[in-house]
Image 1 (tube, rainbow, N blue to C red):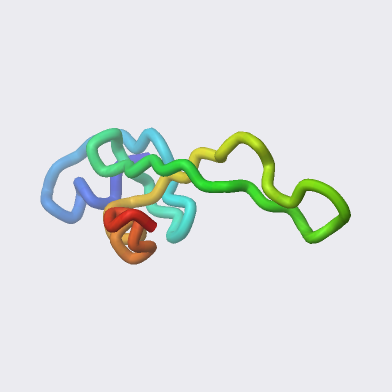
Image 2: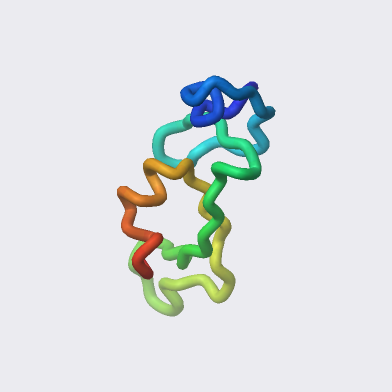
Length: 71
């Protein structure tokens, strides 16, 4: 699979991940990795897990989520 954003500008690069939001393939240059809290359905006890999960998005989805401005 090739990086969708690289192809759009006339380059080719292998995708190393898939955007969690839109499913586009992203290369190392275009992948944005963020840490997000993992929550489970409301139940007695802990609802937030202690360790964050990895959240990889393409540049478009990263900016749409507002993660570039602190969430």
